[in-house]
Image (cartoon, rainbow, N blue to C red; front, side, top):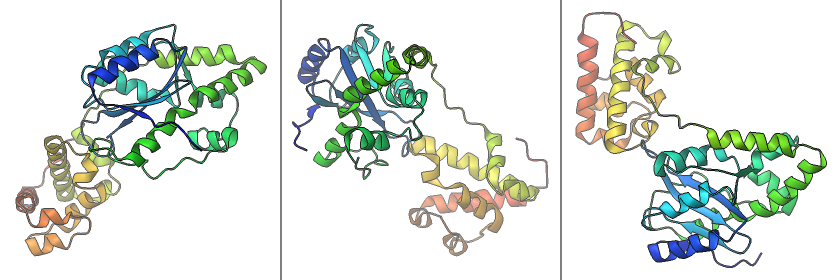
Length: 297
């Protein structure tokens, strides 16, 4: 398939031109990529946009002030097309304080129409014979510079959404379901941002935690709190600091030396040669030597 190159928006001049083009469009397809699989404080790292004529990729780190995009999102005369809009809308509200009006969600439409597979890939395969490349599905979109193949991957999340929307509108009208779909879309626009709240007592939800003795639970809680603090400090997803399985192994095996520590499955190598290993060993020792007491959630 021969396509025009996606337009990468990396400066304010190009962004202003883009907004001018979007203001003339009746339909604008939108998707976002975030770094939630990698960062503690996840944020939108890429915004993909398609019109009937062109695909665009906004780099929000380089494009400058993108407040003008908020006016497109809130404009009731421009229909914004998403696939599974909930996370995208939540991120746009959280990171940029944008308001979203007048959307069409192709995933919600597919569900209302009775499709069994609601992912974008199977739907595009069925309607357009297109197989999406999933190579970059779990990529850290916060990394720069972007490679051409990553930009090409990202554009396909929106490239077919407008023609897909047209197909689904016809199907919804044929089954007299367009009204129900419109109500569902309006509810998506009104959804509130869900804040991330850390609860210290959630360490007990780790698989295997309930089978630990009192000392083991105390150590596990201390490790859980350590991981949270490190994840925030380094802006890393908690499981990338230490996985739940590794926390449990440390609480069970309670290494006393660096040699023992290095034998624990799942401990990152970088920890065994750094001050972190000393910190964790001291944390385990201190909590193991405390007198038995009830672990407070």
